[in-house]
Image (cartoon, rainbow, N blue to C red):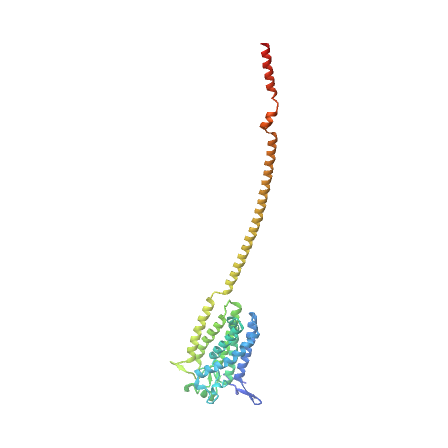
Length: 360
């Protein structure tokens, strides 16, 4: 059996369960959202966050993202709004604008994170790869809707688009007779998964300061969309010959690159805090050393003072004892001298004088 040299389009885009009609486009977005929640819970837990917070954020952000995505689609491609009263709300027919969805979901998500006191930058890095996975899964819904295709091609992976979808897709008349087209939905699916893996790898192997990974998400996806917008030929508002999304993708790619650069140039608060803690510890140790030195010095001073006092007491005692000794061996007082008899020397001298006088 010969295989077709192109990617065939699916014959259906929905199925029914009783009275309920399930569109593959909506189903793929629900699967993508569930995958994003699971991935974000794991990544948020890995950085010490509460995984239950992811559910709270998703509960508010997902509806906001759907609303924002539909508003963006209605504003940028009003010609594709179904001509029914609920046309502006028919997300299953026409789709969502990813940039509008991410923008409004981010605003609501930041509000919830701040309400819970969580680190917004770290959460944005945790959710960045998950968003790409959700977008990639959502592109499978574009395949079932037979939309998001590019220029005609004869490549083996060209996407077959039935004639009625070429007409309703608003492609230029010169392409209506072509049968196969560039499968830009598939290109984006591959890029989304590859860029998500790249962000995860960077987060594990490089020091990326939050929200650097989210900034790279904005830059990378928007840069890819510049390439995709060159290929796409479906209906779009054009300005100066270029698709509106081309301008938006270019602007967001520049913003993402600058955002990443500035986020990585910003001083990391962690080392500063560590240095401050080290300084405090050193100061505390120095204070303890000074206090210990003061105590030691005081003790030594007290001991020296005691020694000096003891030495002084001993010296005073010695002086007192010397004084007492000197007092006992010294010359007599005047009263004692007057009471004592004459010395023997004087007596002998008078006796000699008396003998000489008698002889003469």
